[in-house]
Image (cartoon, rainbow, N blue to C red):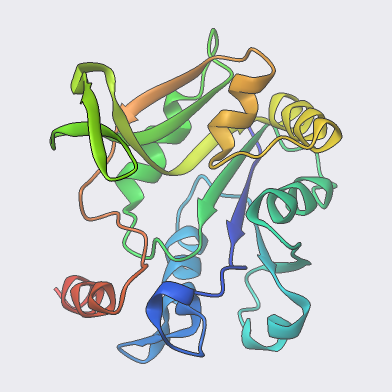
Length: 218
């Protein structure tokens, strides 16, 4: 069973209020992205790692353990470029946000093992605990039933032929998606959701760097 991991590293980090993209911020002598790469490079089930990165930032990815792929103008295009770059006979493709540097080996193993028929893929997520409201023009319209609502994470894992077909269709129809499972949903596929970890955050705001520094130093 061959598994290729695609790590997305194309975000500009505008919410960080810093000229340096968040994936290149230093945490304990390594960048956020380097921490993520190390976790996947040391995982026994991962056969190959592709890092999708903008052309202008190619020189910032120094790891010899990965193959670099030029990213696109959006995450959707970047992931598609990564999928198109898979030349070996991978059975499964794992897709992960490069700025989720605190993902654990256990979460990676669990989501890979959950990607089995009759499902087309598997994804990590957390049941929503906050009250959800639908709001329009700063006014609450109604409360959303949270009993069936999950907040999605990465990694997400799919059978190669399924995710390839899904992204080809999404690109052809110019559909906007916010995660990879949505692409599979679009073609009628079934994605299993398993519970992830609250520590597997996506580095987005300046305070996230402080949290990650503390967590990775444990």
